[in-house]
Image (tube, rainbow, N blue to C red; front, side, top):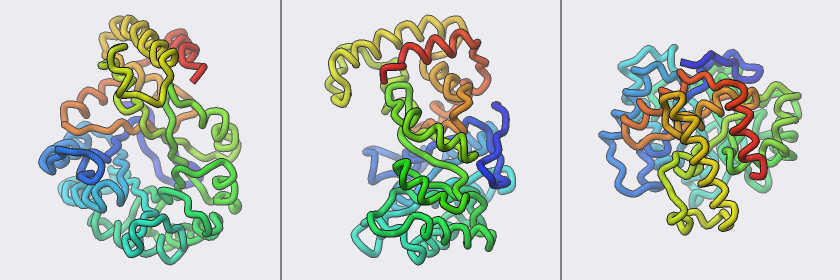
Length: 305
């Protein structure tokens, strides 16, 4: 597995390859999910020493956390890093809420579902429009002092919101949309995060499957957020990466994940999995040491995104 990294100013340590669990119990997000598959995904990840599980209340309105909590009972809790997120208020039609009172209740409820007495990383999942972000983070800082959480994160925050949230230097980690075909955070967020010792976690690292290499030019209608020219370039780039992957005896997806793992700007990469076989495939990326020239070549291919 990959080297361990420290999360911001906290004492939380995790490997650079984690597991995203929106397809574990996330029945409100994906059709056809089976809980038994979700249990198998979590067990496989923990058996293979993936130390970080990334979940959220919105993944099945707590169901993902419940499945993780069930599985966790048969493992050494001290060896697992649990990251979860909340912001959707079930008492108010799932509207976004960052008030201190809501966040403190959300943490207590997550602890119950996860069947644990502490959460390693707790994120404010989305920013609301009214709550001062330093006040929201202040509530989490109180929970950190109480030992209920160990590290403080924010997700989907703009740079200005991150700065406000980090007014007292209490933010340890930021999670946001980032991939080789969505690199906005690189310019907007990375310089500030590096300067302030805040780790970064990309979600959608495989761009909803586009970067796995399983799609062709004929599939463009599935990816309407890219122009015809952009999509054509992406598919062409992936064909080049396929040749690189062959040299490493790896898949395209494994090489892409290895690129994130090798990136000094990325703390943890959290590809999701619907089936345990996908976990086993993703884990192989952690054993790939990309040569610097291959890392740079892939970087250059996607600079326009």
